[in-house]
Image 1 (cartoon, rainbow, N blue to C red):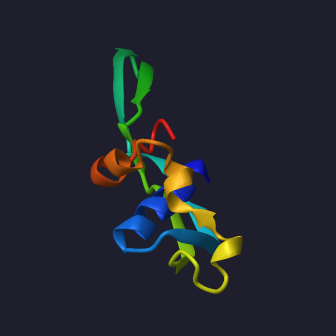
Image 2: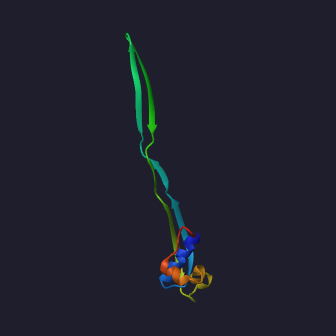
Image 3: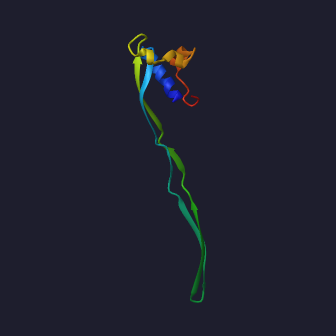
Length: 115
């Protein structure tokens, strides 16, 4: 949510507004690990003594590769306000949310991994 709040603040400033309220949110984690089919390798020996046969074998399963699919998704509904507009007194200041280097953050964006 910290990253979401900062992104809402960035978008508020970019849109020409000063303050914002997050009025709704939704998120989903659709990540999963999928394993591809593997393969079997069988080796063995057969011997025959008279009319009797013997077989000794060994089967090894080699699993297939795995990969990660999906992602983390988040949607926000943000109500933006101009300074002094009715309702703005209850909204968060976009510049205060981003801190003293807000202009750089708006220009460069935020590192979503570091929050």
